[in-house]
Image 1 (cartoon, rainbow, N blue to C red):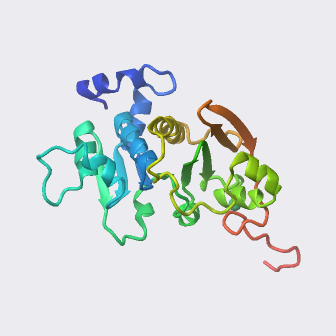
Image 2: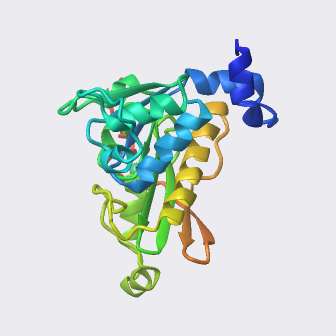
Image 3: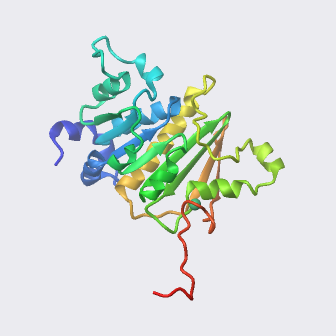
Length: 256
Ligand SMILES: [Zn+2]
C-alpha cells in the first residue's frame, strides 16, 4: 500500500494507465542489478532509482567516477559515493553494493540491466531477463534477452547471427560482431546526451518487464544512429544451435 509521500513522489508515473498504484507497488517490490562501469550505467542507475525500483544492485567500484562528484561531504569513510547519492535521491530504494569478488550477484535479483554482456550467460541459465544496451561511437543498440522465455532468442543468438552479416555491411553500419563482454561506454568521448537517451530506453524496457512480464513482444534489436537519432528495428531469429539458449532435443529413438 502506497503512503501519501509515495503517492506524491510517483504521481507522474501513477497517472499513467500502464502503471497505476498497483504497478508502482510492483516497481517498489522489484530487484534490479546494474552491470556496467560507465556513463550509460550511471544514467540507468539514476533513472531506476527515480522510478522507485525497490532494490538496486551494483558491483563495488562501478560507476564511481560519475558519482564521486555528486556525493556530499557527509560521505562515510567506508561508504560508496554511488550508494550515498542514490539513497539520497530516493529513500524508498535499497542500494546493494555487492562485495568485490562476488561472482554470483544474480541470485539476489529479478533481472539485470547491463551495458556489458559479461553476465549474460549465467543470467540466462537462471531464466531471468537481461536488458542490454551499448553505445559504440555514434551507434547505440538495445536488445532484451528473455531467459524466462525459452522460445525467445538470446544475446548470443544475436551475435552468432551477426557473424553472417557481410563484412562490407558491418563496416558501413559500424557494427561489432564479437560478443560484447566489455563495456564500450566507459569511454571519455561518450556524449552525455547519447547516454541519457539510451539510459531512459533501457530503464523503460526494465519497467515494461516488471509491469507486464507476460507481454511477449517480438524480439527486436533496436539500433539508433546519432546525432540524428535515426532508429531501425530488426527481428532477431533464435539460433537453433546457440550454445546458451538452445535446449537439447531428445532423439526419437531415445528410450524414456
Ligand atoms: Zn541464444
